[in-house]
Length: 293
Image (cartoon, rainbow, N blue to C red; front, side, top):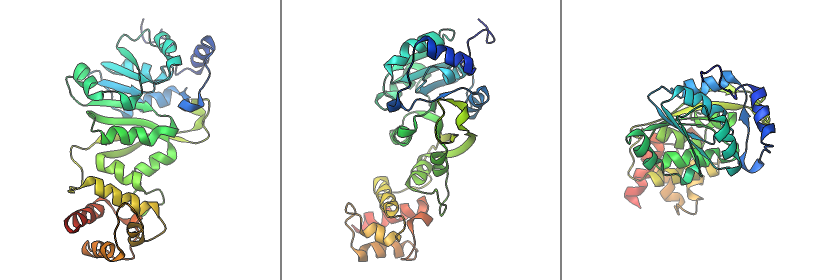
């Protein structure tokens, strides 16, 4: 079967036909919105840089729409789907693509290291996903923090979340997520996607963002966990000064004097706000507190 004869789900009529055939009902708990725009599907595959040499892991294939495009471009695709009701549909829609394997599992419980060893000689793989918006951040941060063997992660997320991931210090969108993502990866906003590209239509705009894994963090700090604790403390009370954010955080247990000494030692004004600082400043604060506490 050549590519023209294959039942491409980027065609909205084919998507509707499959959903009707299986009497599929969208489940809110899984945040299911399926893409029905071939142009966007092509953009995701291109943004991920998928080639015929690549092994790709797709998170949440749904009915297999994006999976088809990935399989057409990649050497092999492993699609990890949590919804058991979608398995018979995927068996149908992906039957013309022998280079696809579907795993019924939660991606955060999937042994991606083992998968890389079995399917990709242990080399870093490319991860692609149209993520449910309610669990976007836990999945992205879970995979980045676990140090799974991946070259990049190209994901469809809520537009607002994509903006936060690539935000610069001092901007309205800048926050703890911006710093966490940049510690592990280099973000690149590849495309904005309007609601009419999905079925059912979401209430918000979406965006495709590629996170390219850094070989090493941009900031070396003795205690990364403390650095992120400081970042959370600073943004938990966004409208207050960094000094107040640090001294009011019960986990840090810092006196006003200790917090101010750390800020001044790092060459910062005691009235500085946390949202104006970058990773380098937070790393320096963490190193000073590691030495003095």
